[in-house]
Image (tube, rainbow, N blue to C red; front, side, top):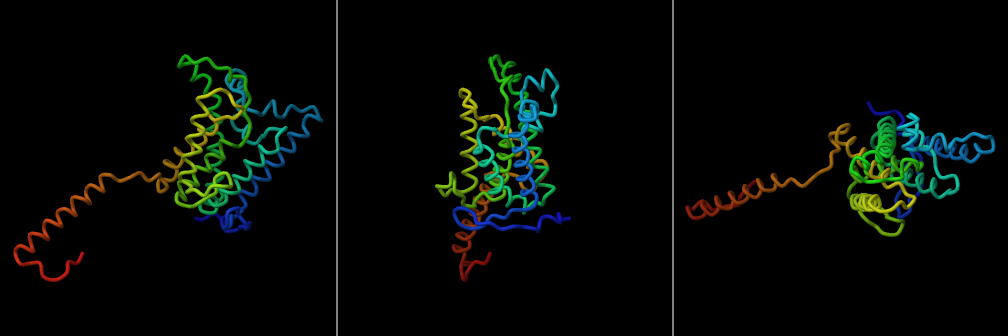
Length: 261
């Protein structure tokens, strides 16, 4: 049964032409992130260490059992950089609204939370995995905050659902959505192999990876389409057999009239 919120929409112009639809679930996520960001800015004045308690630190999760952090980190943003939350929320509006309209509020919200929390779990586990591989890391104590894990999951969903839709990458270059998702994924993968740049590429990759797994399991009809090489080979054999049969029929006087298939 379709979600009743799916059809209540608000339309806004979208950069590059066309329209984007602000569905209620996306609107509520935007409001929630904005309210929590204001709370972050005001919390120090009241002596509340909101960012310190709710940002994700692997050491806090593993050794202090602050198990809420893989959930709470995705609602926080850098207090000293308004561009952090503005970019994430703009991306959520731009790509999430269309996916939410197609899926409905409950499915979209579930996907958003699963991607964000899944990315948080990966961030918490990543230093331990590196140490098992013999790689020394200092990221146990580094905090991570932001909705980027969930946002990258939404980007993946958009690329899977609308692979050939043209979007403006970086607000400048028109490109098909599937290629944009591939490029962002490649950038995150490359960034995760370098030094700490202040950007959590593991969160980006984690959001995409969890989103991919979720789409494969939760929505079997939305699986990523891979080339059907076996089908193409069978079609080639069928066409070859048809041509041989046509040549045979022409040689034996059966080549009059058009072929119907």
